Length: 269
Image (cartoon, rainbow, N blue to C red):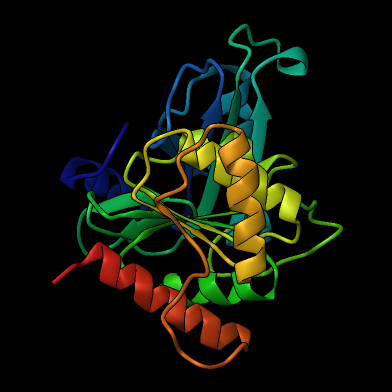
């Protein structure tokens, strides 16, 4: 049950007629797996439609969805290794976003990091790396806009809890998630660590991308340019500092300036 469209929407409407449902969507994968990003299923107490690959991984996904229906939670991020304890031979890893729904969208919908949302199937993906104060403000500013939004932080939930409009994916090495993004994605790097920032920027520069922005000072940019050049990477398309030239260092002001910049890049005159 991949992608978007009226047929998928009809299934969702039929299942919602009996009460709330949970949509589980694959938002990232690593290694070999039977299904890919965008594949999804709908789970209700006595019924499920679609698939995220079958087997124990799918059983665990449906169990998590039904637990959400039972306890009232609205969203969850589920990480599933496809090896070891799950007795899967694929050797990969899946990340799924689960979202509880009470009503169906009014039209075709797309699967984003936080679940099903009304969206243009061709909407630009923006990946925000970092869940600090500025990262949280930026995600809040971007969430209502017609983008596919992904949010990644290196710190575990118990070290840096975050509440936001979309789930924050926790990845000890965020640079390993870069490969999950489309070739035209916008990448905005603002983690808590210069070393983490550098690893992410290097990973993005090594592949196709639409935009790469790095938060920081001119001194930080100069140091990064030197280190990236030592790795033989072309840094001409690295944008740093980021955002429009608007005075103010408050997180909300920075987020507004970066959001405006990304909108202008996504919709050139």
